[in-house]
Image 1 (cartoon, helix red, strand yellow):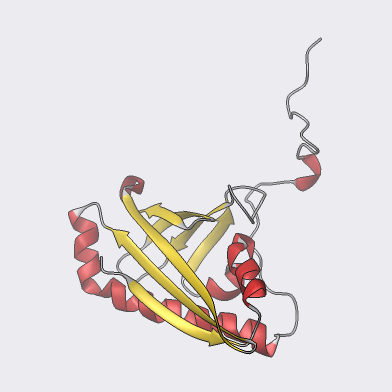
Image 2: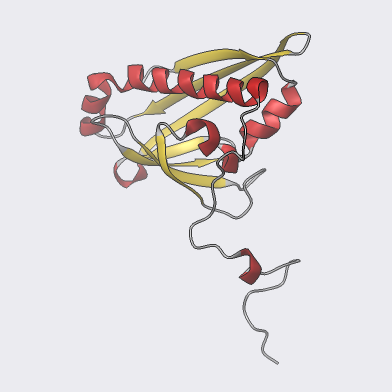
Length: 172
């Protein structure tokens, strides 16, 4: 697939935007209109090793996608479709930041190539543009109330091992 590139200008410091985008748990606050059933794959949602899984809810082309903090993605039938999301965050002026998001993937099966021809590129461009607009609203208009955050399915933090302790009992 040819890359889909969208951009937006947001009145916020570049470092704050980077921290927000790099935190996978914050994605439902601005991407839940096209990423359904969003779950973290690891308790840590920021930094190396963070991962999430969600349903890309495109018409006639729904597929589960797994993504990591470096935005290496795979999805589709048997996880054979590979792709990436590249974020470019640059200063555009005093207190203004330009965000450019490029999404690209390689379809693995004839069925997925057929679905791509049915308009998934246009759909992805429209949804990505909406997501960046929602991100701008979060930073510039400061919505009331808490923003949506993803959690790990079935994870109970009070039962998790702490400080490097092993979850298995140590035998004498």
